[in-house]
Structures are given as structure tokens and as C-alpha cells.
Image 1 (cartoon, rainbow, N blue to C red):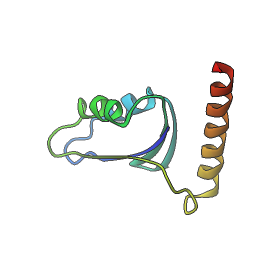
Image 2: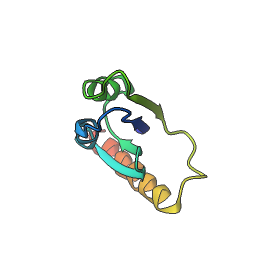
Image 3: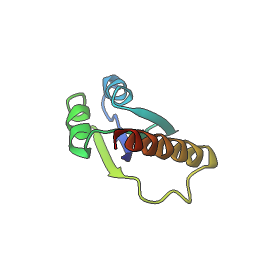
Image 4: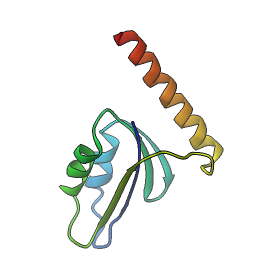
Length: 94
């Protein structure tokens, strides 16, 4: 699954949430605070792991990536590569 993850560190920036995100799968940085995450974890698991590093003034948004046509071309290539790899892994498991 590929998720789009954005967060805003409103208080003193603590980058532990970023490091937690980077440890959950393959990531692609869209902007300073928006990332694509290719992971086997559920959206809830990702949210729980990140919320552990955020305080009440920070914000978090996580959603499945469903449309890619307006993303930059390098991001589209990254997504295609992730989907191809996921399909290869699925066919090996069968």
C-alpha cells in the first residue's frame, strides 16, 4: 500500500516522527512535510507510530494514495517502481 503522509510540527520540531516514518517502509519526499510511504503496515499502524512522537499542537494526515496524475514525474516513477516490486513479491508468495 502506498500512503501519503503529511505532518506539521507546530511546536519545537522533534524529528523523531520523521525517523519513525522512515523506518516503516520505502519513502519518497514530496515536500518538506509531505511523504509517500510504501509499506505493509495499515494506515492505523502508521498513525499510531507517528502520533507517539507528536504533541497536541502538531498535525498529521494519512491517506491511501489513489490518484497520481498530478504528482511530479519523479514521484510517479517511484510509485511505479514500488508497485512493480510489490507485484513481484506477491507473485513469489503464490
